[in-house]
Amino acid sequence: TTPSAPRITVFGTGYLGATHAVAMAELGFDVVGVDVDQSKVDALAAGKVPFFEPGLPELLEKNLATGRLRFTTDAASAVAGADVHFVCVGTPQQRTSHAANLAYVEDATRVIAQHLTTDAVIVGKSTVPVGTAARLRGLVAATAPAGLDVELVWNPEFLREGKAVGDTLHPDRIVLGGASPQAEAVLRTVYAAPIAEGSPVVLTDLPTAELVKVSANAFLATKISFINAIAGVCEAAGADVTVLADALGHDVRIGRQFLDAGLGFGGGCLPKDIRALMHRANELGAYRASALLQQVDEINMGQRERVVDLALEACGGSVLNKRVGVLGAAFKPLTDDVRDSPALNVAAALHLRGAQVTVFDPEAGDTARRAFPTLGYGTSVDEAVEECDVLLVLTEWDQFVGADPQRLAGLARHARVIDARGKLPAAEWRAAGWEFTGLGRLTA
Ligand code: UGA
Image (cartoon, rainbow, N blue to C red; front, side, top):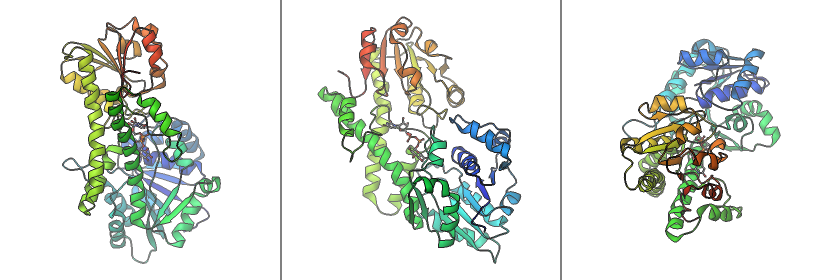
């Protein structure tokens, strides 16, 4: 390897891999993104990001133009030319259990090892159950050509969708698990820019590195379920959870982030990661961690039911033939991702109960329609609000938070709104004539 200018491959061109490949090219390295999906490769090679991620299309185009960044399905040629190989493929939840499906990670690692022609560092970034990396080391040892110096290290990724570019170029920390001094040197070269900017490097072993990742997501999930549990107490006691959260947040030990009560967490990461950790903790006999996370999951899923119930109540006990306007389909703003989206779950549950549901989302309309084709979709806020018996705000896009309640009140059949993300200016909506319900702030 040549630590001064390592050549890089990135296996997997989903959210994580596409962003990582582009970011590595932006840092000045020669990068090849590899995927088994020809359509993803073709799109990226043509400068098209196959999902909505602010800032990424511009950076992709810029780095394709420099010639430093390519995409291919030809793993053999990509691997042969490079020194550092990032594994960025998905680890979805298994269909029949809470465990993570590791087939893609194993396949990518095997393919990399098989095609190596020089010494190399294989860097795992995918989210995996603790113990996986040690097994992958065995796989690499059994698969890589004899005589090569091949190392496998773990370097989890903490990027958020919607902020993926910034999070990748300026990470809060760089965790390196199981790196020899040589591999550490190579990765310090790869990450020289963020390190120079102050991103701390945490050197540790493989299992700790794997666990940092899932613990971080488990903690974030726990914070959200904590505030949602307290929101229930607030409702029962006539308190306001948004004011409470602000007050808690002034304590720097607690912090204000991830204390937004509401519909709870969804997406491709938090739900599956806490379930995989629950499963793994059980396997390891760490039952308390598993029990804690079980509660976190239950509280979270309960929020979706709570919002369905509030909608039913608002419509007098039944939504049959009622018009329900739904603002938001993505699992959070600034993404078109609808994986495990609480918003779509609620919309679908009301549809099942006979409501005529019209969903509007500024970016996730198409992905939502593909996932839930039976729901109605509008192309504007107005279309969702028109003639509705109740309006649900399920994803806190700026354009919903900033909408004019006065104007919208004129469109609704019944000016009733359920703010399931706690971000609408309640007083303004009330002043405009809306019956306003906020989770954890029913009397606010
Ligand atoms: C999450 C983590 O935040 C990233 O650090 C991690 O790298 C990523 O998973 C991953 O494992 O790949 P992401 O799934 O993009 O990132 O979404 P978050 O911003 O964490 O939001 C997750 C969910 O929590 C959303 O549905 C959001 O609406 C909800 N949420 C967030 C709340 O309900 N309340 C809050 O206060 C904050």
